[in-house]
Image (cartoon, rainbow, N blue to C red; front, side):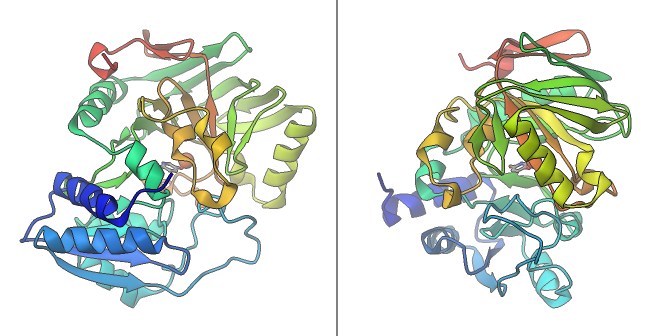
Length: 350
Ligand SMILES: O=c1ccc(O)c[nH]1
Ligand SMILES: [Fe+2]
């Protein structure tokens, strides 16, 4: 199926309006050679139709010699913007940046946000953008869950597969993603609909068991056998299992950086229009597979960087791993029971 350009522009107009774009605003569209030309054009036309002053910042392609694969989250930290201070100043001058290249997990993104500039990441295929067009109900549900998470002192995750994980919280803020950048200095991602935080440094403990069907990004694979991760003092210390455990071990070892084993963001999915099955219907190069990160009731955990919240772990290897059928507790409140969102009530899809 394919979204036509008129529909794509109309969707961008709606999301940019939700992101508070109007005739008082300037909008920079950030692109590189792999940006979807339809997305760049639709974002540009939509911002113009909303009366904003629009400009396009195109950066030359950037490849790190050790990067593998084309998934934009496969190699984090260094980007085409790294070291390009003139381009960064040009981007900081905007009120809103539509990022069709991906600055996520780079220090430059944090520096830009600190100036008050808003960033909206949009790198998924137009058809995925359309299926998960954000709305104010998404925002209300995610913020309701965030109100619980930001007060929490511990997150615990258990599952019938054998997960038994504890993460003391409080050192880092709660991050919400509801699909539009409507506050000064806010980063968001269209499509999304989930929330997360980071464990207190060196305090996450326990076991996480990836069961059959759980998703590993950026591999874009469904686990076909169990993989068991042992976590001590905030780091993955053992990866047990068969071939898939060996593949994960080998991939992480390749980066030759002990920080790749640090636990990164942990949270849960609240997007009912995201589907666990969607990844199986897309080519690996279609996008970064936000369906896997956002599907309703997942436990999404990750390894590697924590620069997004001011941490010092700037490591290029970032695994996003989505588990189904977990029990997630925040303090003593059960928020997800066997993969079903149960609380807070205002975060549930009615
Ligand atoms: O939206 C995203 C995408 C990737 C990621 O690691 C976090 N959030
Ligand atoms: Fe991530």
